[in-house]
Amino acid sequence: MSDGVSRLVRKLKGVVGDNHLLRDTDLTAGYSTDWTGRFQGHTPLVIRPANTAEVAEVVMLTAEAGFAIVPQGGNTGLVGGSVPLNGEVVLSTMRLNDCEPVDQLAQQVTCGAGVTLARAQTHVASASLDIGVDLAARDSCTIGGMIATNAGGINVLRYGAMREQVLGVEAVLADGSVVSHLEGLEKDNTGYHFPSLLAGSEGTLAIITRARLRLHPHLTDRCTAMLAFDSVEDAVAATSALRRSVTSLHAVEVIFRDAMHLVSQHINSAVPVGTNSEAWLIVEAAASSDPTEELAVAIDSLGRLVADVGVGVDSSSRNNLWQYREKVTEAISAKGTPHKLDVTLGASKLADFVTQIPAIISAIDRGSSVYMFGHLGDGNVHVNVLGSGGNEPPEAVDAAVLEYAAKLGGSISAEHGIGTAKKEFLHLNRTSAELFAFRSIKHALDPRQILNPHVLLPSEDS
Ligand code: FAD
Ligand code: 2HG
Ligand code: ZN
Image (cartoon, rainbow, N blue to C red; front, side, top):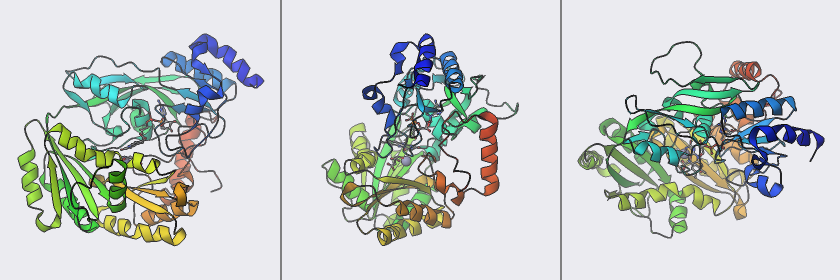
């Protein structure tokens, strides 16, 4: 251990206690590698403070000692932003795990940044309320990480992304000062809006310690359908029609052909409907009275657009359909280490994008396999690419996919963020004036480059 780290550890013992200062590589390894295994770093120290005051002191002392900090929640981020790739200190939020009682009158809750989504969901369910964002990493991802990445997930078409759920935040800035605004007022035009600024900031501007979240009435009745389509165009047209006609629409998710065959092998179950189709939608309707009829009528009126349909009304048949979507990521990881590209396209460009991407990738590397799936209701396609033998594909694949998305007017990051993986591509979507403004904000709030300095912003000369 270097002298600098030893000195810092001595000071921090009085703040968080020895048990929450991890130095052995056996103990820090899990904090240094990301969920996919693609991003592997190293750290001299993992610090686990228990409350906002401790976070503030930790940030002050760590900055004073000259170390940069990577804030880390559940470490489920997919863009290499949550791990110490340059030997930074890791500040884990796992002990910021208090949920305050649900404010039933306002339909809001205040949670610690380290509370997992699943725990927050269970906590608010006791008041028949729901968190507006849901995603498959729910057992591990944290409220703080979800705000920092502006997570999307499966219900964005109904409730918006994480930014729309956050009414207030408490956060520690890079100099150790605390900003706290947790009253949860629906209208509050008293200057700059920290929740908006911090949503999507990826740990570069502040460490979120608590958040006030908007909640939604729990919808008791659900119906889930899987629709098979012979072409990507048909799936896109059906999505648009369903969005227009189904008032109880809760999710429209997509799995394209190769991803569907991979996941069905992975879970050892047959493709439920339309085995030879090109695309499958998982469509969910949710309401406080049975939405089955509304969804059935809407699907019926899609007529010959749909090649085949399966429906789940009870929770076991609905979960059976959902696993084909929720287990794709796991199925790909079981085959190797993918490059994950997460793009949004306008509705009119989606079919073009999805049909061209396999040829674009194969022109660069014939050995790569491409798996596509995502949140079609939001125009969000996840392109996962595995190189031959499950190895990482060539970097040129990332450039080609992201450049094609940008050329079609799309975004190079729909919901996972920029992290370290996409930062050198940010210029595809952001002008130099925007990047200059980004850097000015970062410099104003973190002039010493303490908080996640290698994430989001591209190097100055790129
Ligand atoms: P981490 O991975 O720990 O961190 C992510 C980023 O946030 C890092 O830059 C980190 O520095 C920063 N950060 C974390 N906590 C804080 C804090 N308290 N203050 C400041 N910065 C902080 N994402 C989606 O958007 N939609 C999906 O549908 C989706 N599905 C997924 C499914 C699986 C199986 C997996 C593995 C991931 C999925 N993700 C999805 C990605 C990931 O779950 C989200 O990005 C999530 O929001 C990350 O939360 P986390 O607590 O794990 O954050
Ligand atoms: C999902 O929608 C997640 O399942 C993960 O955002 C996407 O693995 C991915 O690329
Ligand atoms: Zn997603």
